[in-house]
Amino acid sequence: MAKTLLIMGSVRAGRRCPQIAAWVLGIARAASDADYELVDLADWPLGMDSEPGIPAFGKGYARELTCAWSEKIKPASAIIFVTPQYNWGYPAVLKNAIDHLFHEWKGKPALIITYGGHGGGKCAAQLRQVVEQVGMTPLATMPALTLPRAAVEGAPHDPAKDFTEEEVDMIKQAIIELPSARNC
Ligand SMILES: Cc1cc2nc3c(=O)[nH]c(=O)nc-3n(C[C@H](O)[C@H](O)[C@H](O)COP(=O)(O)O)c2cc1C
Image (cartoon, rainbow, N blue to C red):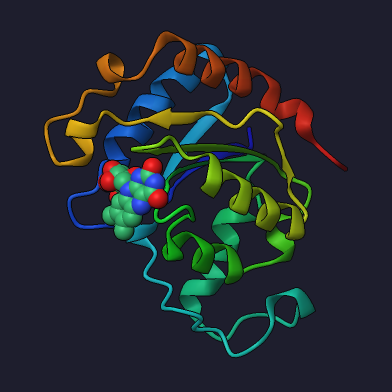
């Protein structure tokens, strides 16, 4: 079965992303029998804009790690982005990971889940525009999770306790809708 990749948007020191992504993964696995895999961009040190060619031209890649990144993304059946909001945008590492490829993203349903002190609606809107440009089909439902102020300031955070039932229900609903978001 082709995998649904859950790509984490943060590589920041002290990040909350692994904890939140693992919690989302638990919800996804309970809501559907799709095959999920977590992708940590910290394991993919692609380098900033490290490819000399333009991925959209489809002439191949110069670097081995980009080829491996291409092979990771190409067979996936869908992508779930779990990303924080930084200054109303999403982290540069995520944009860089998207920009390293082009055709590999095409036709895949995408679920955008964001989080931040003020939710993540602003960064979700930016990410949506980019995933549409590379040919993915983003779901209209984009859960934006609000982190408690104390968690943003570094206090221990438990997603299962700190996020609301409404936020959980929205994630479940989006997980169920995700496979039907295909555009080809
Ligand atoms: C550089 C930076 C900018 C941030 N800007 C925002 C913001 O614009 N809106 C928001 O809701 N939260 C903002 N935050 C709070 C983050 O969403 C919060 O710290 C979150 O835990 C970051 O995700 P991470 O810990 O996985 O890196 C910002 C955090 C950082 C580090």
